[in-house]
Length: 455
Image (cartoon, rainbow, N blue to C red; front, side, top):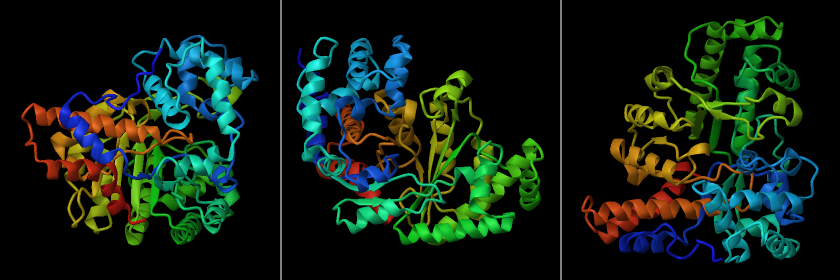
């Protein structure tokens, strides 16, 4: 049975196909991902197709669990070939799930597989792809280069030495692999990771912590970092003595919700000012409930597919946080993401309150993230931004992935974008101005990110 992936996949109109022809070969700027820089530095080769597609991919793990696959074939000790067979068996039933599209895009682009993956052909496809993966042409670096990637931004803790980024740069690898600053463990004072992390830094006071963080920001900046990222359970805003709250936490004393919020607010304002002074972009991700299944968290740890969407109430505190920075002209370029799609209009209207400064859409509504990283979610994000802001200034897609073949998600996004805009044009909602339309879709697919981030 033939795969659904062909030249016209998703593209439902003549205009959509014409627009896609303008963007399909543009380079990729992957400004937020979770690739391991060590694997790029050593130019790792995956041993088999199961390791490449299933290792660490909690999207696929969730789908397999929903189909009733035993954990032994998901995160357990079964062979990767057996795991892949179970994945293929489940995938055939996953109609409507973006994994069906993603997987077939990956198999088509990287391995030339023109068949739909099924339980019956899983072993044959596994062997064909595994043989290719064991050749030099399928090393991590070559997978990146052959995806037409120009920039990769990994996600890195302030304490990281960035030695692998140095190794990559010194090797002469033609793709920019840059760090991104992720200081969650210093911000989230209410989590069990806070005290061990502070002990690791060696700081003894809040002022020392801020001084240390500023020095790490300088270090990251020297290494080419131009983005930060904050993964927040909630948006804080409260006043209080952050230094006294820090001291209290170090003594192991319980903190009130108000104290937690006050500390986080103070540190986020500090970070915002530091980012603005360096010309960085700040990313804020909010709206996830993490590690819901305590039994499985204790068994296999975090980031294994047991997170969900939170019922968020973020507008008021986020407005106050941004306003605090804006009052002193220290609000950096910012990208706002919520895992809850109901927040698209909250964020879309809020960002309009803080635009300007000669930057096209200085404040951005982030692309469909995580559970929204699918056709409906992307279209709804694009429609919300089109309704409330300037869609033509959008910085576009990212992978947010640990996989070296997830760059097909950029192609997926570009098809969805061109199909949506093509539909609007053919429905008479925008003129069929070839030059302007090309400028818009090429900007969203590549040019806007290139200009926005100052890499």
